[in-house]
Image 1: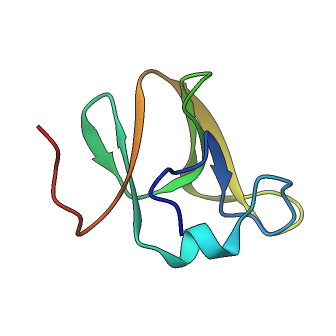
Image 2 (image 1 turned 180 degrees about the vertical axis):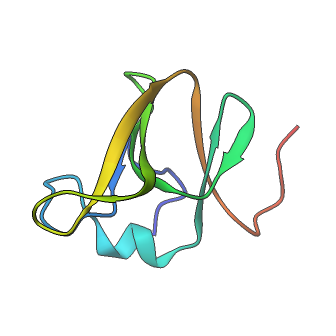
Length: 83
């Protein structure tokens, strides 16, 4: 499996950016230098993450999300940090 993580990834199986093989790895997201644990989707090239907005649900029972803009750094947890 490649060490390169995708530019865009979603945890929603209905999304075209969902990839079960990549999600099987322990993926972490740093947003503006802070570890985020509630990320539903991210895009590195566009610089945004979608995070759950509290306990609110949409009419289909999925978590409501808000989009935050800033630098996004996906990584595989447990691997040694570079630098």
